[in-house]
Image 1 (tube, one colour):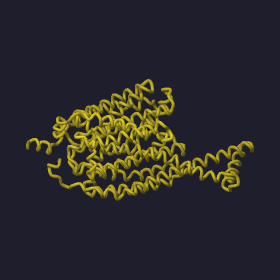
Image 2 (cartoon, rainbow, N blue to C red; image 1 turned 60 degrees about the vertical axis):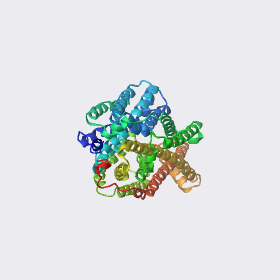
Image 3 (cartoon, rainbow, N blue to C red; image 1 turned 90 degrees about the vertical axis):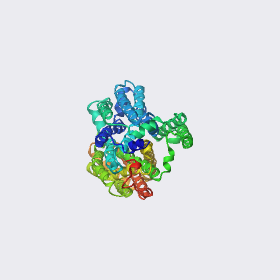
Image 4 (cartoon, rainbow, N blue to C red; image 1 turned 180 degrees about the horizontal axis):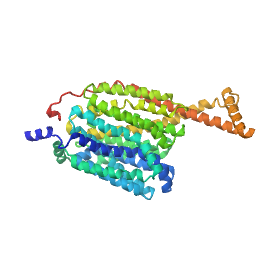
Length: 527
């Protein structure tokens, strides 16, 4: 028994840890990229397959729902089947289903392939993060998570630009085909380099029976919740009976799931880990990080395309330089996390992010491309100081054999935060836009000096171009109304960035609830 203990706790991977980190990061980048790259191709997919725009959105929704279901249970699946085996199975499924997506001749077959692709993709990130946690000693985890974090935060920024370029120059099928060679390389390298530590092999042999009730409840609850978040704004939330039904079903299923898993001797999702102060706080911070990262990545291109008239590719080019900043900041954060208080780093990161988001409230209809690029770069500069320390603090004070559960839980929190943040922001923008329209419409009336001046100036300009007086008056009035709508929409985006900024500012002191990670860890603690 002592020999077994030494073997477990003194284990080191046979290959260079950095080679392993790059191997799993390759698959991470491929999977995260796929969540955003298809967005800009939806109109082309709809037109090619004879589907409506609304039907084509199921290409995105089906993937999100499927991956959301797999995320929380991936920790249990790793323990059940072995982490390397589960990871490679996810890579195989994701790669094969990417090929099927590209070959799909009809929308139903494409959606089916996307569901299976999402199931494979959903299991990649948690298993990769758990692999990194076991591969690197605590002192070097920050740098390892920096490499992983570069893929997580850069891929969504690059996705729209790459997807737009591929769609414009080739066709939408290639946004899925490009995953195949990357997946094959990842599979080969994973087979050669990735291995399960001894403690995980022992745990796999001792795993109990399948918790079928918990498995069914989490699939039902998370699937319904993701559907509600993705389709709620489009269907006017609880004004639609279908959304109301799925929301109630999700609430009931998840409530019962929490009770069931809390009392189950071998739960699929170990909810009792949340009692750990570090992990419970880290999960909440990961949730908020997802809201900010994914939410801002959605609404900034939306602002540029809807109000500024940018193409999808041009909008992607405006936010992609932010990824370059993150690629520069991630290694710096990775080195600093082992040299300074990780909690202070998170607080600094949130402060910079809050200021960057507040700065975006200055966006207006005359803003230039270079200004948007600079403001976006400033807005994301602090995220590296949030992502890396939180990923490191996740594991403080938690038994090493729970690494799989920790990684699946934290990734689920970040992805769920992204879904919640996107849904809340789009709803907030829609509702505040209506409020601003009502307020501004009070000035778009005959007798208002500003309105009269605008209409007269526009009418004069149109008549100088050869328009008749009546036609010029009608066109000037329509132009005034359209300008009012754009201004109302612009104000709603400014309000959204202000709300995000205030939310982040309120979280600045929260990291200090957590315990500091130990500087030196005895071998029995894991490394």
